[in-house]
Amino acid sequence: MGSLQLIRVLSESATNKKMQAIYSASSDALNEIRLILEFRNTEVKSLNFFVNTVRNKFIVPLIDIETPITVTTNIDSFNAEIDAYLSPDVGMLKVVQEAINNAVHRAKCECLDIRFNIIEGHILEVTIENTGGRTLDMSKIEKTPGFGLKNMKRRILDSNGEFSFVSIDGGARLRFTCPLSPVQV
Image (cartoon, rainbow, N blue to C red; front, side):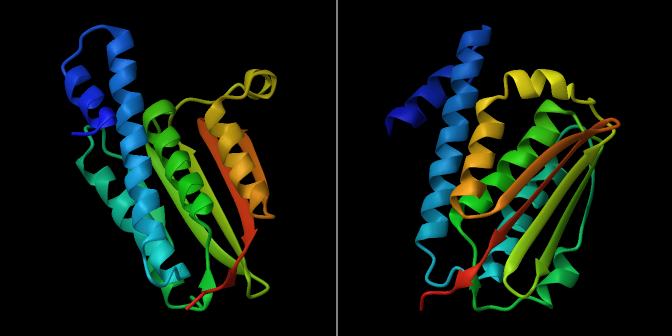
């Protein structure tokens, strides 16, 4: 059993807040490592693989959470339009994962809308909007943004993309664009 798994197992039944925070952090770290390894070990990292990973790893599990969330997406219609020769970066996948996680667990959203679009044939646009939850105080976020937002923005900028995050009534909208590169076969 690895170190992170041991921390996770030992802190799973913890009652104090520090141990619960350790459990949460170790669980997040394990899930992130698994996701990155799975994505990097895939032979062909097509955009089709990317959106199916979003569906299977991030959207489908929302069915099992206690508070029901209405999820709308254009994944099914978008898949038909995908050029299989465009390859997303693993950083983009992490941004989608973090945005969905924040909307569900931090903002306590009731509705989640996830949209994919291809601009000019080679730029991926992803918009994730959550509503029915907490309205964010952007003045607080701008003064002391959390590591989550900083890391999401950094990942997108590192991929030569653009990143925006705005508060909307009862939620937030995250949008990013990133150029896609040909799949390396």
